[in-house]
Image (tube, rainbow, N blue to C red):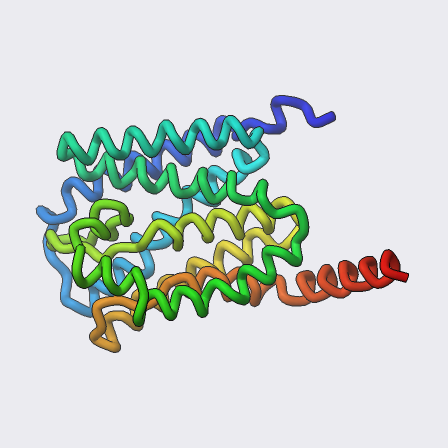
Length: 251
C-alpha cells in the first residue's frame, strides 16, 4: 500500500511551483512595459528563459501525477473553468496560468489510459507525423490562419520584454509534454534527461521559427523525439520484452 503522504507534493516543491506560476503571471503582466530587446535577443530570451519557465511547472508538479485519476480530472476541470472565467474577465495572465496548469494536469491524467510503456513509445513515433500534417494542411493550419483568435484563446502565450505580441504554444504540446514526463517517472525512465531533451528541442523549434521566418512550426515532434531520444535503449528493451512475452503466450 502506498502511503497518502507519498502522493502529495513536498512543501518545498509546492512553494517553488507557486512562486514560478506567480512569477510567470507577473512577468506576463509587465513584459510589454519592460525595456525591449533586439530581435535576436527577444527570440533567445523566449527560447532559453521563458519557454523553460513554462515547462518547469510540469517538472515541479510531477509528484502529482501519482494522484488518483478522479482527483486529477477534477483538478483539470477546476483549472479549466478558472481559465475560462479569467479569460472572460479579461485577466489574460491569470487565464494563461490556469490553462497551463489545466494542460499539465490533463497530461498527467492522460497517462492513466496507457497500461504499457510500449504503447507510449508507439504514440511518440506516430504523433509527430500527425502534427506535421495538421500544421501544414489540417485543422491546426486552419485555426491559426483563419481563426487566430481561437488559437490565441486556447494556447499558452510566450511573452518577451518590450513586446505586446506573443509567441504561442498549443494545448497538445503541453499535454504531451506532461504525459511523457509523467511516463518517464512511472516507468523508471530518465526523468531529468527527458525534461531537458523535450525542453531543449522545443526551444530549438522556437528558434527555427524565427530563422526560417515562418508563422509557426509543429512542436509535437520536439516533444515526442525529446522523449524518445534519451530513453531509446530502455524503450527498445521494453518493446522486445513485450514482444517476447506475447510470443510465449501465443506458444
